[in-house]
Image (cartoon, rainbow, N blue to C red):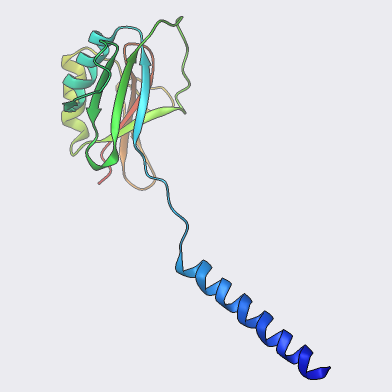
Length: 154
């Protein structure tokens, strides 16, 4: 009886060890960003805004219905603008798209030339926020009021 119990324990521990080894060999699959969709009221106006300000390349979109424009975000994924009707909405600054640029000063000059208002996180106009890690950031809104952050993070 003792030997049957010993054999049982041997097989049980062997089974548990193999399951643990298999679990460690197959790490969980991580999701990666595919795209961000932004609902806009005037597709042409929003397309011009994002293209001229961020220099994002337009890529082919499969719908070809005049209601979508897709931009490449490089290896980060894509930005999809989707035309639709919606009432004026107030968006919270905490929910924003963020893009990094090599020079926040040059980007601010671009905003000033296009007469686009920007502020720091607390809302002081024409003033960047300096994060504790040394990154400068500004916030502004697209034509529909969606918040964008631009920073100079490497």
